[in-house]
Image (cartoon, helix red, strand yellow):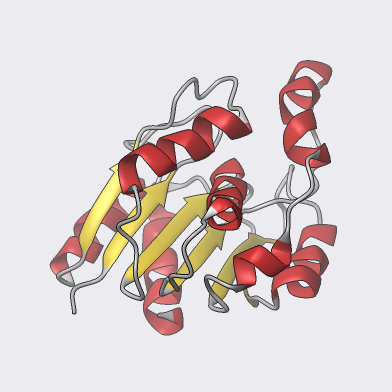
Length: 187
């Protein structure tokens, strides 16, 4: 069966940002159906609008051949989308790049935007009903994603962790090869 891969960008970006276009091309070469989304109001992302966008685009058309690759706040979007699913469907898996459940390095205005994402609880047991196959990529010098995130993802979701050295918030176009390798190894 052909894999369908949804790519969700991070806060302040779009589907043409950083490694997304290269990754999309490479996944399509592997015969994947790739949907790279442009999320709404990317400078002021809200849980409601971003999860709503996934629900609108995906509807209930997911199965074990459905995968997600998300960056930064897009990772929380996928988690919250899966948490809200009412059907019992399992997906193939998710790859989170520079994902966060807690965050550092933000100014006051950014913290105001991030506040609901940080304080609205996530029901991890609901997410686990839909997948037990999540991998995360972290950089050792990310200015936002503090080390505690690795522990939180492991504790709540028993993820597989991959490290990429000295890549900040993992926004470089050159990161697409590493991300593709992790996707292929994980799924």
